[in-house]
Length: 452
Image (cartoon, rainbow, N blue to C red; front, top):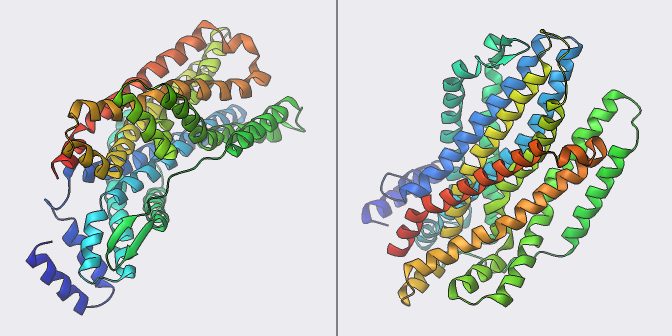
């Protein structure tokens, strides 16, 4: 920290205690005090989260304009799309908050050595995360307004959404508050793994462990979900609630079993590694299987959505419209495409922010390897391998879970139909390409780490 910044810190300490964290946070985040790529990625991700959240919510609530029986069916389908998108959006928001926290270690260490209290350091951390989230959320509201003229042109039931697309201003405020709260909570939770001592700030060097019980929990949840879908419901409303609940649980259970599967796969690759980069890639995954899973978890959500969407597309292909005024089949396909496109946007954002966070997490390791003379190409190969190797496993598992849950509802014919397979294959190819692009985009973050 410069002499000017040090004197500013002292002056801030003499002022109101509430002003201290705010002034410190401003000093640490002025232009030029932090890496641009690592600083912009979290804010951009919060913006995408807010834009998608408002857009999807506005589209779903626009179906309230009809108020008839068919309109209720549209609301049900919109609710299903919300389930498929909101959980990944929350995960993406948490990842953005984690990336924002990874950038602060050196800044916080400097503050602690200058005499700042542990409480002040924690306040600065939460304030920084909240400020980034607020900036991103406000940009996300602007993104919602920018997309509005285009989304309003989308047709459902033979007419454009039009003015029904607009949300009440309170919804926008609620979305901004929710995103900021998510960032603040994620940042505060992340501080539990940080030691704030008079000698500085450091992350606790405890290896992540994933117990086999995760697999047992996942299997139990899926089995209960299948049984729930096979048992006849007492009514249509209850049946819809059961379907929504089962698929929400199925999507959530992927995050439970995913790290364990990734760790098991890495152990096998570690035993069979024949090159330095293969050995390093397996060790990187085993050191932090949860972080490795987060880097590819967005693709799992796309695969989950693609299986459901593909089965729906196959079912609609064989269906016949009852008349020229029956737009249901066409509208369902429109909704499917919107859901999948939103999923791809989340994959692109998640790939960038999670991989940037991982580079910052392992900055000391990469610097040490670089100082010892390891070529940049080998470091990059290990970093890429730690992400790309689990992708095949993730694709298989994320395809199997929704297929098992759909089987009681659709049977095997729709799941293996050419339309379903083509839809899934195309989604996986695009998703893998986006993850790989995210790896390439974070090369500048690695360059900054090695040059530090």
